[in-house]
Length: 247
Ligand SMILES: NC(=O)c1ccc[n+]([C@@H]2O[C@H](COP(=O)([O-])OP(=O)(O)OC[C@H]3O[C@@H](n4cnc5c(N)ncnc54)[C@H](OP(=O)(O)O)[C@@H]3O)[C@@H](O)[C@H]2O)c1
Image (cartoon, rainbow, N blue to C red):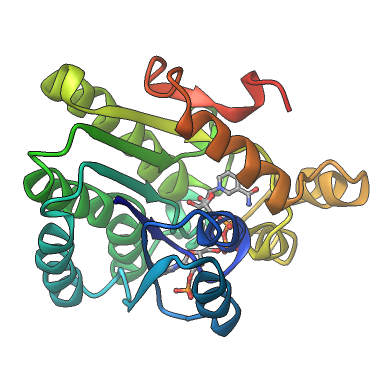
C-alpha cells in the first residue's frame, strides 16, 4: 500500500494537493495546525486511509514526536512519498528591521529545519521501501532575491541545497526534488499584498500580479505537481520549477 505524507494540508496549495491525494487510496497522512472535515470525508468516500496530525511545525518538541510517529508509519510500506509543502513568508522586513530573533527562528524551523528532520525520520523508517520520493515545495525566492524577504529567500535557498545533498547521499535509493510552484493564488499571496510597504518595497509587483490575474489556481498547480511527482521524470532535476513542464 502506498503511503503519502503531506505537510501544510489545511489551506492553499497543500489543501489542493490533499484533495487530489484523498481520491487515490492507500494511506494519506496530512500535517497542519488546522484540520479539514471535507478532506476526512473525501478520504472516507474514496477508501483512502487518512491520518491527520495536528502539529505546529514551529514547536520543536512536537516535531520531534511527530518524527518518531512518521518513522513508525513508514515501516513496511513499499512506496513512501513525502511532500513538504507547509511554509511561511513572515517576517517580511528589510535586513536592518529584522529585530525579532524568535520570528526568524520560527520561520527557519517551519520552512527548513522541520523538513530536514522529518525527512530524516521518513528515510530511517522507509529503508525497505522500493519507491521513495520526496518533494520539497521551494520557491523562486530561493533563486532570485526580493527586498524584504531576507528570511524567506534564505530558508528556501537552504532547502534547495539540502535537496542536492540528499540526492548525492541517496543516489538511486531516493528521488528528491526541490520545486518552485510559481505564483499561486493563496493566503500567502494575500499576506504579501497586505504587507507594510516600508518593509516590503516590492509590494506593488504582487498587487499587480493579482490585479493582472497572473496567479495560478492552487488546483491547477497541485495537478501539475502530482503529475510530475508520479512520473519517471521526477527527481531527474533536483532543483526544479513546475513552470518548466507542460500545463
Ligand atoms: N503562494 C505562492 O505564490 C507561492 C509561491 C512560491 C512558493 N510557495 C510555497 O508553497 C507552499 C504553500 O504555500 P501557500 O501559498 O499554499 O501558503 P498558505 O496558503 O499560507 O498555506 C500554508 C500552509 O502551511 C501550513 N503551515 C503554516 N505554518 C504552519 C505551522 N506552524 N505548522 C504547521 N503547518 C503550518 C498551513 O497550515 P495551518 O495554518 O493549518 O497550520 C497551511 O496549510 C509554501 O511552502 C510556500 O512557501 C507559494
